[in-house]
Image (cartoon, rainbow over all chains, first blue to last red; front, side, top):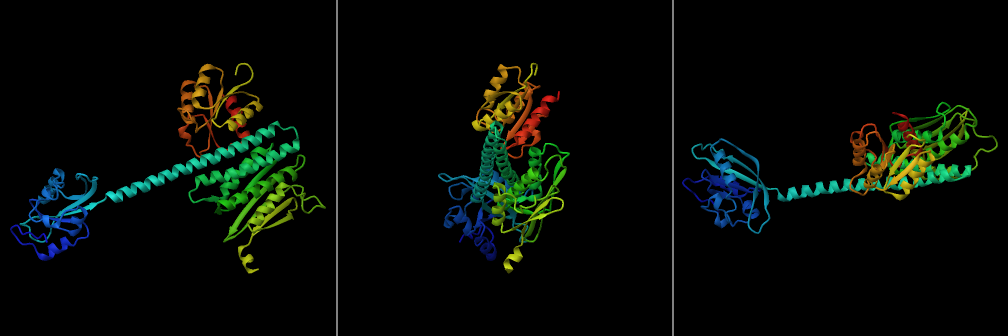
Length: 344
Length: 123
């Protein structure tokens, strides 16, 4: 269509390649006359192919391509003193939004060194840029929302924890105070998961860090004399889903509270060991103390809320609870056997 | 801290958390003052010269947040000790004035009481 010969004839194949280029492409003479334009160029920039022959780049369309910067860059390219590589320019047209373009220009290398001609490839990146910006904005917005939600959760937990502690300080009954403290420990146990989650991106919780934090906090608030009682955490590098970690954390909280309260009466020295290990989908959690052991005659200690919580959560995790005499002391072992379950 | 009880200013915009924090301070044996945002805290600090420690939240309504408040206090009333608590789990220590303590919310009451006692006993 636009194979207007100026002085010389261009090879038909060259013109055909230019016209059929998928990327908007202009084939220009040294003095920036349009020898050929790709169909994609005409379509993208709304230029009637019939108007192209004998036009200069500057007079295409309504003159919107008459950009001094582009002209000087093309001139420099033609003289071999510069190369336009991924140069960004804005295309401005009346009643149209400005388009962001990336242009690449080079001398056509067809062996004819006497006659310089240029290939100018133009990519319209406006939409891609807008999309990328939208995506960035969404990601940023999501991060801000997440932070806001985490902040709200932390504040709500703080209100709950603070009110429980204030009630505990004001109440006269020793027993009722104990219950309020237990409720406070449960809230803090869930808060520790929340804190872990806010620092992980995938919604997974590293049990070692979580249990360590949990036991430090339980010890700090429940153990008056560090030389007498201690809690040690022996956990492999297991990582579990948030829901599972909440259940495991509450189980540990209940069992540790129970051991601190009942296993070491008087001035007895003692240790509580939390052990967790997993192989494949199987896992074993144990909380053992070296205290006085289970009082004879009552294999199942008086079921309180704590026992109820442990049983309900263990059932929910499809695991089995085993309470045994650790001689000295008591060991509560909670096991999940995924494979065994499937066979039965 | 010339005549007995140390004075602690609690800055927190949540009414319930503020109430409990004041109770925590009182039951630990200190005198408690309260402000609901940084602007009110600064007015109180300007009015009284006997405040030993400020225990502040970070995200609050008002013209400045708790971190800016902490820096402002350190700059204007250097001897005042600072404890900062926030629902944001990680706040870089470098964003806080040196010597101040940070606690993520929900904090343990005894941890705050310990920190107050320790900071007030150091020069």
